[in-house]
Length: 432
Image (cartoon, rainbow, N blue to C red; front, side):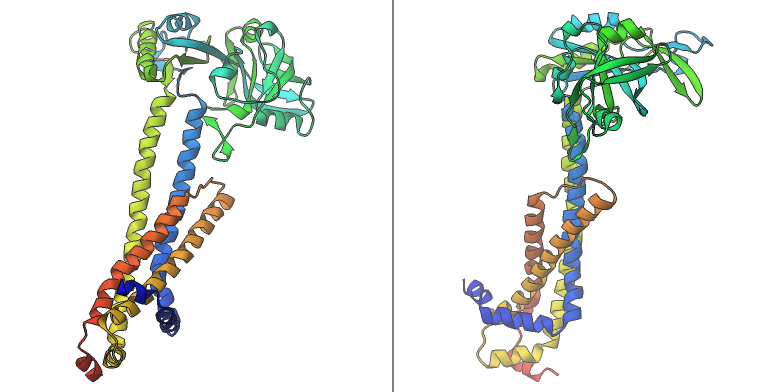
C-alpha cells in the first residue's frame, strides 16, 4: 500500500516526466518497442477478425440447416464414354432429387438451374448467372427482399424475374427496375424478355459483398421461375470458353437440402452422399456436397487458433519492448548512482527509490501503449482504405494490449527499480 500511494504521488510523477524529458531520444527509442508491439497486436487482430468475420458471414448466409449439392464437371477419365461431341451430360439428375426427397429428416428441397450468363437492358450488358429456381429458395437461403415481391407458384411459367442488388445497379443505374423488362440471352433461344418483379437486398458480410462460399455472388444473380427455365431452355446450357462454344446438359445445377433439425445435418449429408454415389458408376463423381454447419464449426476453430497465433507473435514484440525498457532502466540506474546515494542520505527510503524508477517505467510503457493503440487503429484504417480489406477492431484487443503493455513494463521495470533501491548509500555517494 505504501508503494502504491508513493507511485500515485504527483511530485513523483512530475519527477519521472522531467527525467524522461531530459533524454527525449532515448525515451522515445525505448518506448518504440512497446509502440510496435501494441500496434502489431491491434492491427493483426483487426485484419484477422475482418477476414474471418467475412468468411463466417458468407457461410451463415447459406443456413446452418442446409446442405448444398452442386453439379460439377467430372474429369475426362471419369466420363462414361470417350465421345468426341461437344455435348456433355453430367451432374445432379431429377431422379437424384426424388431419392434425396425420400430421405429422413429432409424438410424441404430447392432446385436451381443455370440457364444463361448474359442479361441486357437497353444498351447495358451484365455478365451474370441467370438461375431458374422455386419460390421457396428465398426462404431456405437467407436473402432479404428490398423492394417488390418474389415470384410464387401462381406465376407458373411466366416470364418474370427477381434481380440481385448488383444486377439491378448495373443494369438500371438510378432508374426504378420494378416492372421494367430485362432481356436474357441464351444461345438456344436468343433474347427473351423478363419483367422485373423484385430486387433483393444487398447481401454483405463484414462490409463486403457476400459470395456463397466463393461459388456464387448472390448480388450478381438473376432468378426466374424453375418452370419457366424448364419450358424455355430445357436442360441445355451453352457456354463460350476460350473462343469455343460448349454445350452442357445439366438437369439441376444446385440443390439445397433443408434439414428439419440442426443436430441431424451432418448425418443427413452422409445419407445424401451415399444416395448419389449408389446412383452412379464406380469412380464417377459429378457432384460436390457442401455442409455450411461443418464449415462454420471448422472456421470457428481456425479463427480461435489464428487469434492465438497472432496474439503470440505480437506478444513476443511486447516482450522485446519490455526487455528494452529493462535494459535502459538498468543503464539509468548506473548513470544515477550518485543521485540515488544523495536521496538515500537525505532520508529517502527504499520504497521511494523503487517507486521513482517504477513511475518512469510505467510512464514509458503506458505512453508507448497509447501511441501503439493509435498506430494500430490508424494502420488498420489505412489497410481498409488502400487494400480494400475489411478490418474489424475488437474492443477487447485495445484494452488487452494496453493492459499487457503496462504489465510488461512494470514487470520488466521492477528488477532495475529494486536494484536501485538496494544500493548502499555510502558506496553510491563514492561512485564516480
